[in-house]
Length: 553
Image (tube, rainbow, N blue to C red; front, side, top):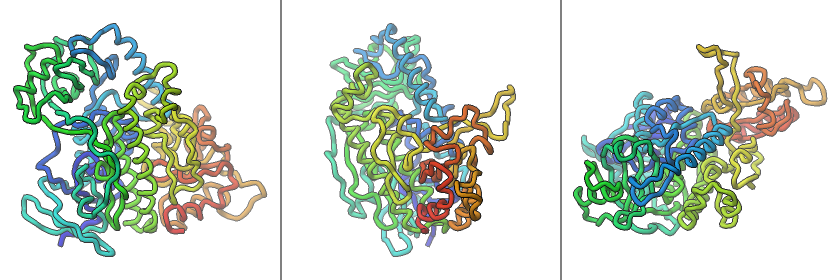
């Protein structure tokens, strides 16, 4: 019988992300995908900045940007009777909004995405990552049965070569909203389920340059009564998607072509309908994300209504959270209790995200509006600003020490990324060993880059200072404590004194991290703060803290 450490069921975005993150942590999974090949029909186009950060960790941020559509100077989300009716007078306001969003993102993240990136293009990047790391993706292979034993899971697979069994130590179920794994395990789901009308997702090709001129856009809400819907740019040149409720269930290519031409406002434009997918927004949450050695991720764990572009990004974050924990346990660097923290952390985030997406169905204007008074109107209905939903949450689990669960702000993402335990480590630009680029400029790296998928201790510039009280025993300065913590836990722990081992040109790190110059953050491999010591007085506690966080204490 074939044996693997991890079987990933589902080779879509979340399954490929899980495989890529596992491979980065030196675990080579097997991916089984029931479809014959990668899905070439775009389903989502909103790649969040946190997802880009995770691709950056894989070394794939540039590849993602090369496939993204450059939307500088374009409409973002706009509305018109037809595409032909887009008003160029509205462009300056859209450009101002985009500049503001870019500045806000630059303050909290090292990552950039130059525009929209369709899900099939993201999948291309992820598939390249997994294949280059030696992961096998078996297309045309479906899961038929699962059997759990105390120390493994046996999956029955059927593929092009016939039926066979695979024994895996763990299974990641990333097989979508209709998850076979979830059904086989009997895990219930809660929530309203299907929402609104069924929609047709029409992928089409058309040269819209003569129609658009300089009026490029990411999303255009069409209000024409005969073809209401949303036109989405896929490559910004020839490939587009039209989501509409006006297409009959049995609509063929010609009927879809007529609808597209109506939405475009040009009955003569040459339109090629490539494919059509029927879909309906849904909102569901699995009652649990784990059953023994099987973990649900992505749509198998939660289906999130589309407004907000939260669904795919939440799924990728699930995979990122789970991968390092599985790797640590498989490699003997953490105790089995660490795996309990996957559900402890990700299910509350998913529940909040599901609720926030539902609120946007009732109040779509509050999602898009950036005008005066919008923040108070969002607060009145319990809506969080979108960046806070995507990145401003806080984990509470046994893999975090000292979480403060109340968010400082429901609007300001920067206020939430303050170095508190359970939050993503604050981004600060640094320079290491004073390298320079070819043009003589300092080469920057982020605090996130220092973490790079491993346990990391980020101390302030006075981080080698012995705590008050004198010389003390070995292990009372941060470098000594870090060495002892790594030895005791049997895991790698990178240690940096920010401002000494790496340059902090603006001296921002201590304030950004919420520590004094001799304090420190203990950052987990997923970039989230596991523990914070405001001063060096906490250095003697570090070995015990790390052992406790990884489930060995």
